Amino acid sequence: MSGGLISAALLGIPGTPSAIATTFDAYPLAQKGRPGEALSIGIWASFFGSLVSMFVLITIAPQVARMALRFGPWEMFSLIVFSLTIIASVTGDSVLKGLIAGLFGLLIATVGADPIGGFSRYSFGIRALRAGVPFLVVLIGMFAVSRLLNEFELKKLKKSGDEKKIETQDFRLYPLKTLKIVLSRPVNLVRSSMIGTLIDAIPGAGGSIANVVAYDQAKKWSKNPEEFGTGCYDGIVASESGNNSTVGGALIPTIALGIPGGAVTAVMLSALMVHGVSPGPLLIGNEPALVGSIFIAFGVATVWMAATQFAGIKLFMKITTVPIYFLAPAILALCAIGTFILNNRLVDLYFLIIMGIIGYLLSKHNFALAPAIIGVILGPIAEVNLRRAVMRDPEWTLFFTRPISLAFLVLAVASVGFTIWQTKKTKERKKANEEAQNA
Image (tube, rainbow, N blue to C red; front, side, top):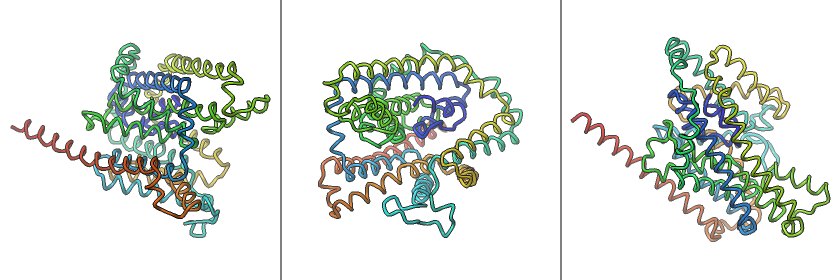
């Protein structure tokens, strides 16, 4: 998961959906002229997040997997409702504009084929819309294309200012300094890693949920929440440890129960079956050497991830010195190629351009883009699980009578209330500081 950090920090474009929250603080820190610091903190957080998830995987995998099995469609829907409350934490200066952007993302998620019945919705007779708008196209368009349009505009307005900023950037790594920064936040690091591990222990949950939930919880428990979004260390630590810990979480149901935690672990299970190994609860007892080798491979991969990132970090940071008129065509070409190969559809390229223009217009009018992306990603998961729950039992009170589902709904209400209280306190603190300065 750590690879998405690079473009998130240097370009403000999440390399993967699981790096969305990483852009909130890693990119502003790089914009302040400290890209090496932003990347180093992210790499260390990724490394320790993976180690925490590996520890949980080795010690309590069967217990966590049994708990995850208790998640039905009611619990998954309530989990997504709780996750959607994160929109309130990433709305930017205007909560109303952030909610509008989030609703826009949910609206996009409803376009196309119905996930249960298969009939077309909101396509307006346009054949291209029958298959829907892929969320990765929305992600690339809103973050990458719109960012490039903004960069072109800034380049015209402040041509000499951009060149000056590039010259004053600090490309030093500070590995020991950033290691101390990460380790000086043990509560945030462990909490975010546990969030990622537990969320991805639920089959199909995904690293993008863990990334934004970990960031949201770090902001809620911070003594200085107003610093988030400005290049805050805690934001980078939370988002990167949260998404990288999902790797160990996805392996928990895979090894303990033989249930794939995601697409990658599904391939792993297929490989085991090809070699005559039967995945399931007896795997640990019947194949201890094989399971042990998976644990060791996970540890080795974690170390090499950090090593290769640090080895190539100076090369990665050279991206920021490339003139925009060279960098933009290369990024646009990669965006177009990545968009096309998703479904081999030419129409997705048109969607990419449209979403880029919409993202540019939203950012021009101070709408936060993150809520729209969160809505696009989480909307289909919420709808599918709501429909499944109603199909299995139309009794709506089950969302409140099932303990885990009720717990998530209570957390959702508490999350919204806490965010409102936190926003109010932050405004009061800013007002008090301004009055003190004026006095």
